Image (cartoon, rainbow, N blue to C red; front, side, top):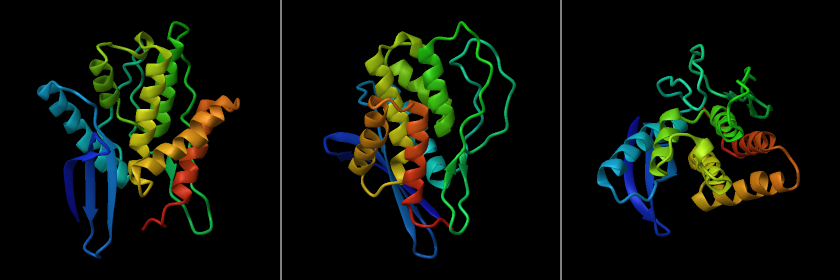
Length: 207
């Protein structure tokens, strides 16, 4: 197996392309949007995290375990996990909802929202921290609602990077099945979970 990662300009934005080639001749490609940062050192750090996450997302593996920093209280370490159950013949993919934990009453609803979405997507905490640093804040509670929406979208589209043939298809699907569903009164977590299962169902059978 060969992994090649390059940065490209796609529709005026810098993206990371990850290509994985197998000896059988099969290949898979994902597109990960990179933040627009003028500071070269910060961009380099963001690119390093993006490279790691992109490979983990394609291979459906978990990066090094992180302890959640969104909450103020320490938590018992958990074993690395993947929220996607393997699909058997004639069965649909099922995305496991994260286990509900007892949450301190002092935690901000914004912190909790980001944590729940991040856990469902199995999105690396390091990348959330980097995103927050680019916004010059230390926690989601310091963001406004528009910025929180953008962070959630960033996490979701990063997960979907290798699930759709074109990045625009992923963005359009997210808008239709998550954003529009939430506007109709469906819960955000339920919408994201259903969207993930639908995205996995339309993919070719994984070997």
